[in-house]
Image (cartoon, rainbow, N blue to C red; front, side, top):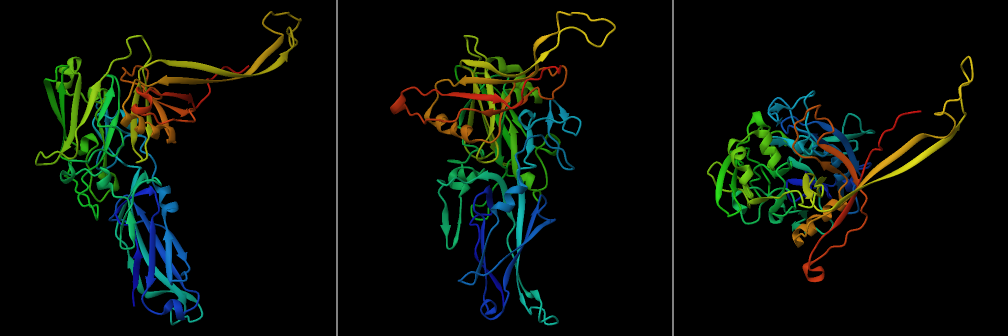
Length: 476
C-alpha cells in the first residue's frame, strides 16, 4: 500500500504568488471501502532545510476521482516578505560605508556596500502526506486515526516572494505545470549566457547619477532546469569595467562575495541562494574601491556581470550609464519599488518635477484676552478663529526622460507595485542615517497608457507620488 503524488509543481523553485498545487492518491481501496477518509498534509516551512519546522496540518476529503487536491499558495505566501534591510546572522553580515549591520547600526538593503542575502523573501518548504480513516488503528476501531503504514514526503522546494502573472506562459510535463525561470531569463548559470540575467525585468542598459544607490538581485547558482538545485560557489566574482566617453576602458575592479561582506552562507539556508549586489555608483563609494575612486570623475559608463570560478560569465552583461542632474536645474528624484519577483527596481527621474502641498485645516474660535489671571489682559495673539489641527500632505509630480519601449514596459511594474519609496543619494550622514535615504511614498498615478515608437514617436511618462505621512505641526 502506498500514497502517490498525482500532481506537484513542475519546478522546485516557485513564486509565492502562484498556484502551488499538490494532488495525492492512494493505490488501494481505502477511499472506496473505508469511512471518514481524509488526506493529511503536514506543511514544513524553514530557513534551514536541514531543520524542518512544521507550521500546520491540513486535511481534505477525497474528490470523485478519489484524489485529494491541495493548494498551498494562500498559506506559504505568508512566510515570505520583501527584504527591506541588510543582514547580520552567524554566517554573514552586510555593510554600509564599512560598518557591519546590527540592531543598532541597521541600514536599508538599497545602500549596502557590496552584497546582501535574501533573508526575508526566501524560504524552503516541504510537505509530508498521510491518510486517515476510521479504524486505521486496530486498537481503536471506532476512532479516526492515521494509517501508520502509508506516508509520502515531497521534495524540498525553494519559495521566493515573487508573482506569476496570469499571462506568464507555463510549461506542462505530464500532470505537473510550472513557470520556467530558465526560459524566462532569470537563471544565473554558465549554460544560459544568451538569456540569463538578474531577477528583474529592468533593461540591460540602466542609468544612474554618481550619487545614486541600488542593487541587482541574482539567484546565486541555480544549476538545473528541472530540479533547480543550487551551488554556493556558482557565483564567484562580479567583474566591473569602467569606460570613458570614447569607449576606452579606464579601470576595473572585482567584487567577491564573502561572509564578511554579506555574500556568503551555507546552501542549506534559503537566504544563501538569492543575493543582492550593491552595484550602483553610491554603493561603490561606500565600499571604497580604489579604482572607482580614481576614475569615477571620467567614467561615462561601466559594465558588470557575475562570473563563476572558471571566469565564465553567468548571464548577460549589464551596462550602467552615468547621467547628470538636468542642466536646467530640475531636481532629480530616484524611486525604488518592489517588482513582480519580490526584489527591487530603480529609476531616476531627472526631468521637470513639481512639489505641491495640500492642506486640510480644522479650526475653532478662541476667546480674546486672559481669563485665568489677576486681571484681564487683552493680548493681540488671542481671540478669533484659530487652527487647532493642520494636516498637510506633499505630492511630487515627476517626468521621465525620453525612454525606449523596453523601459516603457518595465515601468508598468511601478504602477502595480505595493511598495514604492524615494531613495536619496550618497550623503555625509552628519546627524544620523535614519529616514535620510529611504522615504515611503504611495503612487497616486492611477492609469498608465503603454506608448510605442510607432504610435507616439518619442516616449515620455509622468508619475505622481504622495508622501505617506502628514507634515507635522505644533499642538495648540
